[in-house]
Image 1 (cartoon, helix red, strand yellow):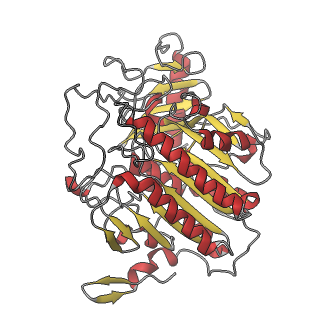
Image 2 (cartoon, helix red, strand yellow):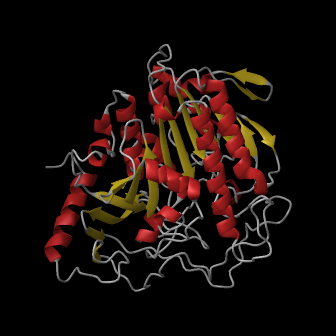
Length: 462
């Protein structure tokens, strides 16, 4: 996996070895190893899928995936925004441990953050076992060259290096801009076409496909086949229907190629929804640490796994890497990870009762354990005025999408009480909307969760 990057007419090979030096020599491909297809929707809400409570018939293909696999009802992002959560997907670590705490944004001059090159990604764990790997879509783990996907174990990249509303909106292929202007009405189809091409070219060996869709992150965009201009204010639903259609295309292709029985398939979101989406009546939205900002849809289907099962126990994004490693039979040092395999939990062999924190920048805001959720820091709020104008709205030149976009009036969940305080305690089984603060009635729970958080943050202290 020697990567050569053309800079100023000079071929430099050294950058490509940043990830390679940490992994073993590539073995001959082991075709018995399962393929891995990880589909991540951007800013999809907990209630955006029919199998999670949206209108019936909106997402038939994803619903079928849930019926054939396992659906989690309490799956969590470690942050209510993009980059740190995506870094946790690939590293199995929570943000305070992998170090990427904010979103890189070229149009805001936030250029330095990125996933540290010394962090070992899921793709790099797979390299020694002969896997071919690609990420199609959103990267958002750094748009400077040292952070590029092919320096983190991936063989191929195609997509936008950050969010699809950050200028310049460009599609890169490996280290080259191939679309300096992107018509986002066709981006879901384009990414799916690229994913199918990758499968066609690599199905003779085990492969890892990370398909990171742009939708339904703003700006919302749908192709003419799915856009319904005669019914205004439903662009979000148009986008979800198109996304589901192309997920169905990809799954059908996997079936048609005879790969389904040896493929791990995950469908998920990275955090809660933006305006226009649905949290399924949970409180808050993206950028907040209320349930609506951090509880996400998560579906996994794996060879010989249970069908049509629902798991109501909590799990979170750092569990993905050790879970995939478990299913693929990889030996990894999970002592350095914050996640753990959820396969014993799914198969009823173990109930995992552990602390799950949520973070905002460098602060732990909440902890979840069992039925309880404690705000160990001040709750975050995100209430824009109804007349707010998005500076990153479609302009037809640099950001090409439908002019029709969701506005702050289309709040995706229950609006948080601005007066909610640090130390608030909620019993999520009885009160999923986080309405009743029980901290005064259960001070011993507050004390126990606070102490356990300190142990979690400082595991080496007695």
